[in-house]
Image 1: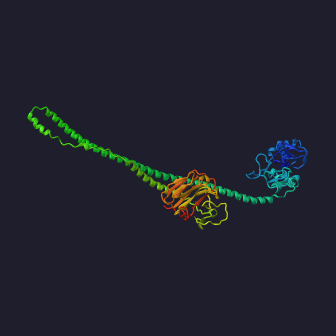
Image 2: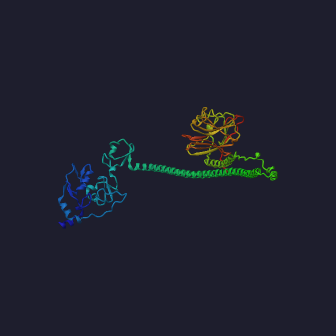
Image 3: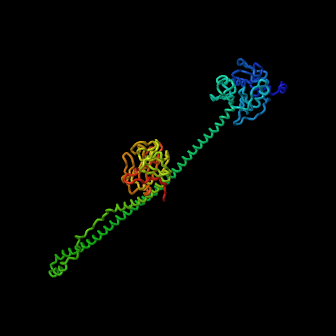
Length: 541
């Protein structure tokens, strides 16, 4: 028996499915042998039951019977039977679907069996006539997904109508009237589209990376701004604290010196009074003693020296005046105020320089200008020319108010611009919402979309409900307008005096803001023909 075994080919004792030595060998009705587990799993995947070797079909699932002869041979000589070693499957490679335990690398996939095979398990397809007819392709994973679920055929066409992969039988059934093309053609089309999609995705990634960098830059700038604000604030407050301490020390010294002078004067007077009291006390004792003498001669001789009193000071006009501290504290506070004003000037200069760093270049939009207004060619100046122009109707144009907007609007961030108002008797400027009414009269206030400063009749007003009248220290030459859209802040500055005029805080902006200029009528309060001029920022040290 042993000699017969050694002369047989090794394949006679190995399962044609797992290619390993038989384990519980069973026979099919067509006479081929398999491991019970292998043939059971194979048939579990099939719709129709057939032999993996000869491809014979069975109407029902056959009853498997143990092959006693092969079982005895395997039991006796199984330890001497080996299958040649093959390479193990690596990552990203298709594994053999038949291997038990550690899977080997598949070398082919069968589109009939819907199974991938390693070199050993592929041998039946290379040896058995029925299996040789199967269509073998390069190893593919997920073979079930490549087959039509309805017709059990390879998906090799693409339906352009329903945008799905179909088999050839689908083209004569559900997709009969639909245009179909080979998968390769649609693959090339989709590949080209994929390039655009990939470029779009890369662009989106690039934009988001830029957003991240912008956010990081904003945080960095915010930290730098915070550090600068703290430094400037500490310097100002430290200077004020030093000034307050000096004022306190000067006040203490001044009051103490006055008190010291008064105390010394009082002490000197008390000493003089005490000396006279002592002299008078001595004289009183002498008088008393003389009153008791009985010696007429001695009495008369001593009385001569007593009748002239000792020299004394007239104390009726002498007094100690308490020191007056009136104005002492005021003078100290005046000194403190002077120092505070100096520090405030430094602070205002620093604040204006910071907001001027947000300068934007804006020009006036002629499509919005009131028909009587004249704009310069560069779009930087506007005044009432006294003549109404014949212009085409434009929904953006102001028809009742002497206003004009800029071309550019702002929907986020910070921006700053300056307007020269020199030689004007009336004007208004600021920022407005893009949706403000253009065709009629309206009240200028934040509720109607206006954040504007007005000058008229020698008065300066922030237009609100009610309006806020502002002090006008000197003739305004140039006004700066600063807006922090995200913080809801609109601020106005007297640029030449470097003075903050007014700030509207807690504003709610939900749409684009436009810089706004209103030069006023040319004959308002006399001659008002001078232009409003959008001026470049001139930062001076």
